[in-house]
Length: 244
Image (cartoon, rainbow, N blue to C red):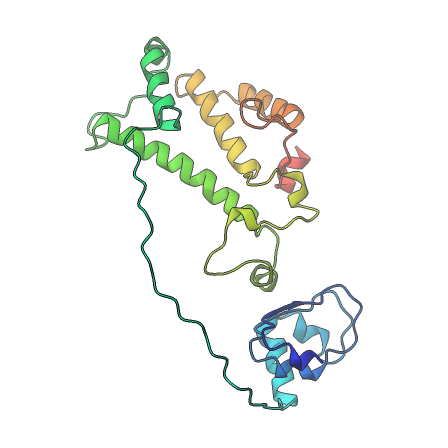
């Protein structure tokens, strides 16, 4: 029956106290991910299954010759490609983050003197606007990368391949388990929250790190979360930070 699943490409049988994997799995031509962790397998041996999909499938294919059945080719529908209407916005979005940021810059010039975080002479060849955009890009990029990494945090390579598409992993595809339940959909991890807290402290203290102030902010974040972004209590991933 399993051999009839011609489009089966991923199978997760982890933590089921299995003893044997059926040899007919090799008759599924598209099967390339087989997650079988946390079982008591004797065929294939659990030690081989713990090495990953490639080792498990190789073991099965070496001991079971698949029965090749020819199926008539299905006729596929062919449709003409038609270019849709192109909608171009002629008016800039007044509520965009970029517009709000520029407005904030124009109304907070007095605060810049309290926090003179200017690069040293000859530190960059970029003009101020370009340098600002580059720094913002670093922060936004780090936050996006952290959110994407939370999709696969503490998953094995086989589990990542089972739950996600290698060519097109997206935030909306995040699975829900005991770890990711602590975070809102599309949220980033504590790493970004801590980075933003430290950067805010640097801005308040004119580029100087005050350990007591940072520690106080971290404690408030642990209890109340990041008030301006996510008011839910912070959840630490680092065992070291959890101990301290």
